[in-house]
Amino acid sequence: MSAAQPSLAAEIRAAKARSRLSLKDFAARVGVSPNAARAWMKGERVPSAEAEVILVGMGVKASFNRSRVKTDRRFRAKPAQTAFGNLLRVTRIVRDLPAKVVAKKVGIDYSAYSAWERGQATPGALLFVLVCEVLDIDLNEAARALKKGTS
Image (cartoon, helix red, strand yellow):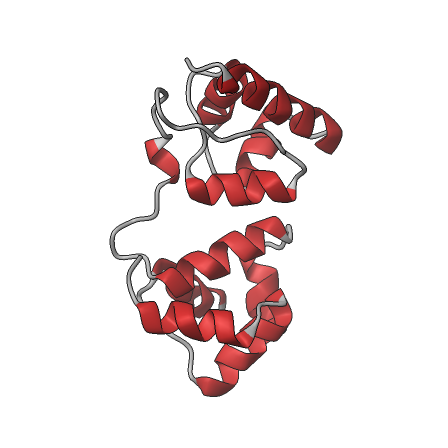
């Protein structure tokens, strides 16, 4: 464990305490298992870059030094997941919105929205603009992610 890890673990524990969530609910908000979140809080593992974005949104300010500690493999993006789908998922989680709520606000079925996040489908032009408005994503950033393809 590197010297930065105790600080990171303390920051993650503090973020969990500030959120007033149970370990299970905190882990669900970040998108990992309770065991993964517990390992972060002990300094045994560090969150992936995707989880880091969510934790920073929750107020974690410590250094995410990944040099000596394993990244939590359960939170890595799947190979088929696109940069656009990853952007949707991370933004939705940071904004604390369930996927079903986003789908309803966009006016589509949950399974269609879920396919966007998984990279199995992409929205048409109108739905692309609507989902960006709902999640407050810059259209240029979303277009770059969509053009980038797989992450």
